[in-house]
Length: 237
Image 1 (cartoon, rainbow, N blue to C red):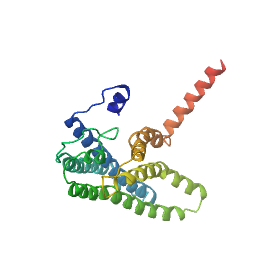
Image 2: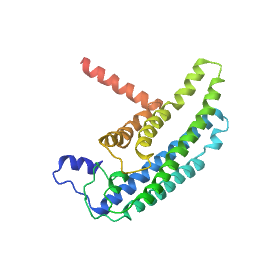
Image 3: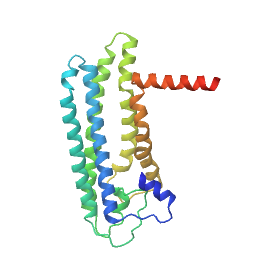
Image 4: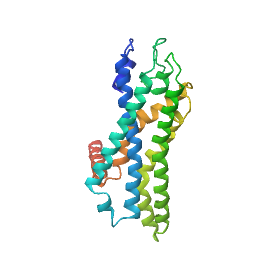
């Protein structure tokens, strides 16, 4: 994002070869980590609703730390593989990346060699990274819905569903957009629509995350109410 903002204000929009590789490595690392964390959060919601009495044991701080560390390590290992597969190719033609950052498809299109094997391996990694956590999330929510339907009171059902609302919103936006870009067998296809879709999960979703995840927090709600109250008093005077 900082580089993108600089490019919007600059006439000379350049990025070094190593800078492009570094950008891709960290983007893919955080993106894959995010996918894996969403899967872990699905398990967290499952234990909170389906195993509430065992939740403090199943999701204690040590377990949470281990799960988070596993997601981060796995995410950046997969990113290293993907970045290496892209930048091990020879680049001897155009150096103009048709995107606002160094993503896989627009960079690999600039290679002047056969990219079929590289694309195939990257596609398989994309399928594993996106579909495996998504299937895990769907299974978790299958158990969650089954448990919620057994709750006798409407208020209890509403509270249980509200517990999952923030996670579901991010899952739908993130996986819906990312799947349309990365679950394609060939990186040769690219269009202006890809840029628009990419903006959704690289800029809009991260900006919304703090709001989506914190609005259910009672302290945050109270702080917002106080801020609105103070604003109202100021406007009246």
